[in-house]
Amino acid sequence: MGKGPANPLRNELSLLRFTAALLRKLQDLEASQFEVIAPRQIRLKLKINADIADVEHVEVLASRTAPGGSLYAPPRWCESSERWRFQLGFLLRFILTRQPDFTSVVRPQYWRERSVAYRPVRSHWYQRIHGLFNGQPAFGDDWLPITDWMERFLLALLHWPGCRMPDGFEWIDDGIGETRDKIQTRVKDLERKQGSSTKTLLMPITTDRRVTEAIPLRICVVQTVIPTEDDLVPDDLTLSRPVIRKKHRNHLSAALAAVNRMLDLRKTHLQDDGRLDWLILPELAVHPRDVATHLIPFARAHKALILTGLTYEELCKNTPPVNSALWILPEWSKANGWQFHTRRQGKCHLAPNEEQWTLRGFRPCQWLVGYPWLDGHEPLWLTASVCYDATDLRLASDLRDESDVFAIPAFNRDVKTFDQMALALHYHMFQLVVVANNGLYGGSNAYWPRHGDVQRQLFHLHGQPQASIAFLEIEDIAGFLARGQGNSPSRSGEWKHPPAGRAR
Image (cartoon, rainbow, N blue to C red; front, side, top):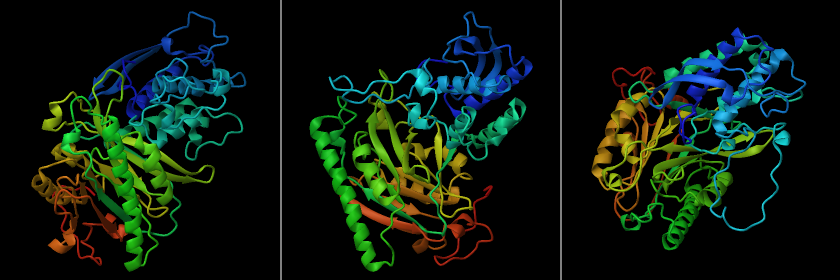
């Protein structure tokens, strides 16, 4: 398994490779040979490449103990032909939770965890096993590289009589052989998504928003000013001192209130309903404790996507802090109404000033967020890199044919260099590039590959230091997705001819 939460099996590609290898082994064994398969009975030979595991060999050993009463025993009603799906599902949850009791929901430690306070009684595993929650939040890490496909797969594996099978996973009822074929197909899809240059996992995640009529994508870029360089001190890189926490939180509150007022202002001169679809904040703009108290309520009020830089945070005990950004993704379902999921985008390459501090690079995957603009159509794919990561040309090469909008939360004083980078990337990646910089330096901008300077530059915030707000829209998403195909005209002018080698 490996030590720590970031071991090479805790990602979707490695999990599915393990699944395919285990199912192949179970096909060769008699169904009644193993009533229980616990983690200690599995022996693996792994090949690690770029922190991703490939299973070269798997062996299932006989247990030395009686199977009666085991936590890993399939339910009694389960027929021998279906036992495999519970055995597999329990092992996958063990890998994801990193706990022998795979029924537990792993929650991050609350900051007052050591205080004396009332806490509800924890239920017994025998009760929890009848209603397992298989969403990513159940496994404790918002950076965990698994998609909604993996969540539905776990739900399908562990479904009980009377439970509704997730759409598109009916093949699990067809047995091990059919399931293994589908898993191998999914593995090939993920391997094709893996970056050829960086070997980074490109993880697509989509949300359902019931869009029956095509709507434009309205984006708001907020250029906050706090923290400043003086606020970042080696003794408190996480910006958790009471003085800076109060100043930082109040600045964020005022910025979100200003966005609401700007939306009211826009309604006075634009014929719209004041809708906001995507809010972008700079690097280090939000403390993790303010996500639930400030950003989630804002996202709930506007039903909007949010991308924000987070302050340095220690993700694992006794490890250096990391720099990261956070996606907040709204999703609608008939059963649960509006739900808001979070995904953390890590930063692999540290800036020169960050290398002087005790920090570490950490990027388990690159998220591709599918924005649903019209039901039944290909989503608009959004992605993001944190400041210095955006200067990695290998990553830009990997994302060129996968994303449509490239957002860069930044805390960068070299504004001129990032201006030139956005000017270059918007054509070489042939997509919309948005830079949200700290207002201490200014220079936030957005470019896309139109003909003519006026159409190409959507906005550019000049001046420093100042907090600013800018809006931009993709009105014709269908035309934007078809950019470079026949050089189709639109209201804003024609698209440039695509760069050489562009696949889409």
